[in-house]
Image (cartoon, rainbow, N blue to C red; front, side, top):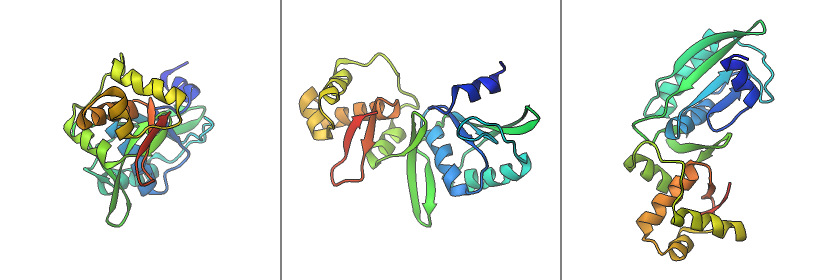
Length: 206
């Protein structure tokens, strides 16, 4: 099994995304930004969500991808392309490196730019808190080991459906700044999921 077949066999995850075609630059920009803001990743164009290879015209796809990278991502992103033949079909392998200038934002509509991070196989919209941390912290966080404060919030969420920043500060006896940083680390590495649509943000287990 070669590297491409292995990627397809493993399915979509925090580092791999499948696209049958790229027709909307605003939507693919969200995936690009989520990879750049997290650990980087690979988009396979010409592969359905279920892993079926259907192939594409690479030049046509590159045009939309470049439009997305340069005009729907801020700051713009540099993509790396590789055309690969599999089962008689052409697949475009698009590599999005982890960025050293986080955070990046995707244009959702005119004058509306939003940040995204990759959590498991999904591009998740970030809150201002996550965006600020991406900007000020080192480009990568250690995945493991988690310290006792980080384990404390996971233990709490194993017994309770959700936790807010204020609750976490109290549980772990942490300052607001430290609690923020730890929650960001847990969100970015897929331990917890951020919910920021309600009046007060809260977190649940991923």
